[in-house]
Image: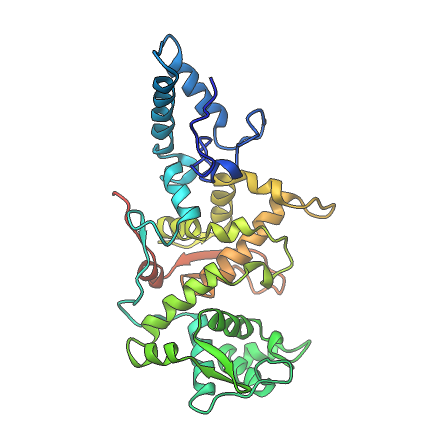
Length: 340
């Protein structure tokens, strides 16, 4: 009997957390169905064995009940979350108050690299505004001064040894901060100058950075394209699953752990992401996902937004190994409502 009662927009019964239309719809015979599509089929077969129903509606109601029970069951591959909760995390991260909450104003003044740069940008704009370059970017001298303060003298010399900061894009963290601030509606161009928006000035006059940070956070996860910062494939799903990464940091970030712990957890939860990686003769799909995840979700997201410390394990120039530990800001910006 077909489970035709599963809606296209409902959680897929395989347990991936994705919508049915984006997962197992049309792939019922796939041998790579991920989280137990075969498992739920076996569960249904066992539950239906020996049962008789008086109508198709009665049978479908029974199947729906079994499917709902499976979707509410905590799974090891989701580290204590159910497929139903994963569905919320992936599709309704800011509209699931029973699962997670995001305060609009933090209880304490936040500290984060993105805020350090935003404050420099805010001060440079001031009351008079800041004149952009002919290409519409931040002026070179400001970028250099901001980099020197942000990195410190020694690191500045190291980072500019093989090429100085001659344009905004040469200082990537500042460039991204400016883009995100614009997306968040905090700064804009007016009469040929960067200015602080009226909304930004209102927030600064009130709760200041405790209210500014949630705006930057939401613009970073919802509007800014994470793939813009690296050369890896788009893999938009990785950004859509930002809340699962924050859940992992909440659960395991109390102590320093190698980044591979988080890579393993993410790949274990969403193995089908490997199918979205374009073929390459140089690097495997798994290694592509691992590297992209570490850069996008850990270094450039959790680290840059001050949610975790993400440190290389050595001083080698091309070190690709990191250790990760959550910071107090994580618990301020994202509050999971989960039973103990």
